Structures are given as structure tokens and as C-alpha cells.
Image (cartoon, rainbow, N blue to C red; front, top):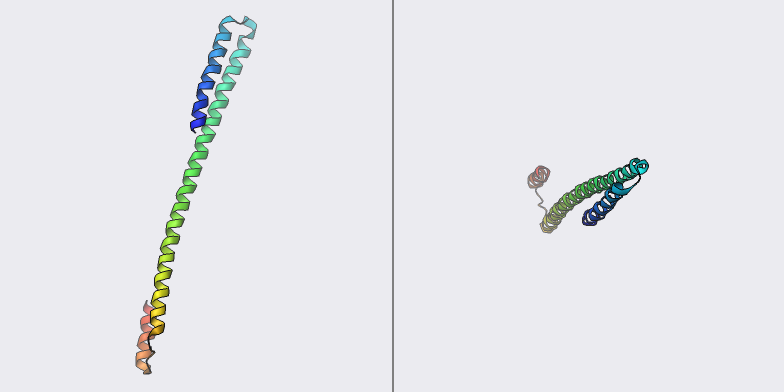
Length: 111
């Protein structure tokens, strides 16, 4: 966008030259010169609008990527926690009593 704004100086210079030419040109060419000055200004504004729209889409895409990255980091942290928890549970001895096993199964299903 900075480069595009820098080109505005070139646009102003070109339109100033066009205005200077208008001041000294033949009356029959006034319409043509005004037409080309208008086209130059319109095209620049079109490019500027397109660039701003593109910048907005890029910013939106970046925000989406950042949100996904944060979600992935949270998921990774949860996975690491779950892995540690399951690893700790695997180290525990499984009780031999049916009631204790049923209680562990119920506890597992709740979590």
C-alpha cells in the first residue's frame, strides 16, 4: 500500500501536466485530453480500491490463521495432559475386586 500511495505523486504530476496541456492546446483536443485525464484518475482509484480490498482479505485470512494456531496449541496442550494422565493411570495396579473395577469404570466414563 505504501508503494501505491507513493504513486499518487506520479498521478498528480501526470494530471498537472494534463491540465497544463489543456491550457495551451487546440480547442478541438480539449475533450480528448480531459477524457484521458479522467481515465488516468479513474484507473488509479480502481487499483487503489482493489489494493485496499486485497489488504482486508489478507488481514482477515491472517486473523483466521492466528485463531486456528491458538486452537491447535490448546488442543496440543490438552493432548499432552491426557497422555500424561493416561500414562499415570497405566502405572496404577488394577484392583481385583469387581466393585472397585466397576467404580473405576464409572469414574472413567464420567471424565
